[in-house]
Image (cartoon, rainbow, N blue to C red; front, top):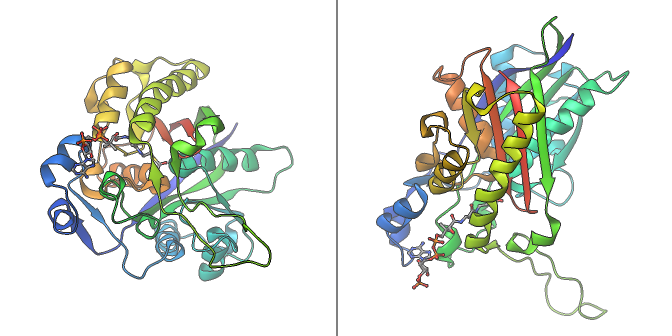
Length: 328
Ligand code: ACO
């Protein structure tokens, strides 16, 4: 039987670290407030590197780790809510930088669920009948620091920059599929609960004044409520579709937005918190990068091993939620 395998994982974060104490020097906040409310202790912030540059570093690492010829990549996807430009897509920029001339490249815009949505798109490309798509590079990358309002303490303390990704390959392995099941949902009616980069239409023609792009804004409590209700539903739906039970899941690799959200989801699913690894203390919320960033750390330190059953789940702008169960 044909299966899709996660062949390699990789990550890259900017060198500059900004601690909660650093933030408390430029806004009315404290390490105590940030860490007790969110679990975040520090984040990496880009100085000069844009999203495509962080993603290109991840791409080069993935190629190095796998030994794959860059020309063998058939599809290159970047999940991001902070692209370099409206067009070209950040995926196209990365494709050009690394010389993946045979890869079709485009972006996935589903905020913090983007990486999960990307896994789903990749799976469809690889398994549609007659498809010649065998090798996919999927990267989640964000430079959120450029879309944050640094005078708004209610959002500025939450986010960080980074990129991480995977190489996927379609293989004949005789076993059961490694992409076991998924559950994706979009709640567009809640879109205004989390916005970034909103552009204004002209108010008159010819245009007067300057183009305006709005910074990040969020109704934190509404997103909190959304995540703690909809993520467990999405996970349970995917687990049921797979014919599994929650107890058969080895690890739940969840989007790192807030350690309290993760703990609440574990509680609702009646699963031990030890099955919900976290790295939010080091990176903050890196949106589309957060799930692959955590996955790469867990694979690198051998917490996640081949053959284990892993839930990957994200939620965020859209509002969106997405779960993918894989056999690693
Ligand atoms: N430092 C100090 N005080 C603060 C800060 C800060 N950084 N931010 C807010 N406060 C104050 C508020 O002004 C408020 O003061 P008041 O009571 O005098 O009005 C008080 O702290 C409590 O504020 P709340 O907003 O009620 O705090 P809450 O406990 O709800 O925590 C938080 C806020 C952390 C944002 C929480 O709601 C949350 O995590 N929500 C989910 C957000 C999320 O997951 N977003 C990511 C989605 S992913 C994506 O797509 C990008």
